[in-house]
Length: 431
Image 1 (cartoon, rainbow, N blue to C red):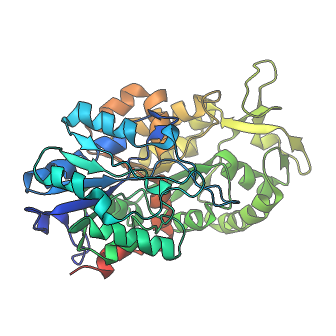
Image 2: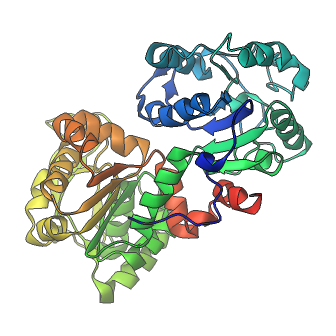
Image 3: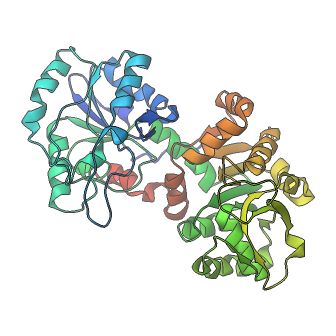
């Protein structure tokens, strides 16, 4: 197994007795006030137990959803993006006794950086063990979390004023915000256990044992082009899905596919050119075509075969890869013969189009010898829903690893694990 950068400050090496420990976690698992999957919360139990066992006092924080209107800058607060369901879950699972401080929020501008004295009553209760911990409101409710201005500085100062130690255990929260980046310069910073685990397994993707199969899908080609090209360099074989594969097909065969923007086709042309000589891309030969997006009308859905493509032809939406595509000898051999498989993909537009993903996940599960690394909440959620038996088996199988943040993995593929800015901040500010 890979090792960590020796300069990375680790939470197990921190003295925590009698100290308030501010931990940034990635508990972004709430949709419309309901926890959709508790995997990310459960993954941080080790940190919470460790802080308490070492005599520390935990203060947790996470973002939930998207609260800022990009056009107006207004911040929407309310039950749908509250951390309250997370605190309720912690109480049920850990008897945690976490309390959310009541901080005034402007209906448009969110929470201004409060006076640290606002938390003094709760901190007093925390230090007397009257409560088990403090859970700050959604970090994206704070005006300074994403603003990149004086409000960010003020929020970082507030966070630093209420704690003695900072821990980043939120690998999935890779963007440099006040709670993941700026505060690391103001308190002794440490990497939490989950962060360490993610970085160790990330090295298995960045320096894979060959043969290496990469699997990537997505709704927009341009958002993943950088990581995709880097992954192409590392992979022995590359399997694409979603609009990414559709854009590749449109660029390679000169066909028009609904839902694929011309800009994506132009970008995909570079990958087509690269693959002419290397031949790394595996092409599922049968696609599921529909004249409408999302809905599934069996009378209108039909199979489209890549071998029948002719330049200038127009197609509807390709919303899934047909399961029989995985019978192709080249694809079957790439999956069964791989020693490392990295999956950041859902093959079809679930839930209506799920057969391609279900077949693919099952084929991956047949490869007992490979390291199988899954990145992304959607990928994990679909694996759990479509192949529940495989998912449960994988939880106790060391050959599988589920990253808590797919976007973070793709960012690291492009920039390097320690190029992720919040991780770099831990190194740069280590004592």
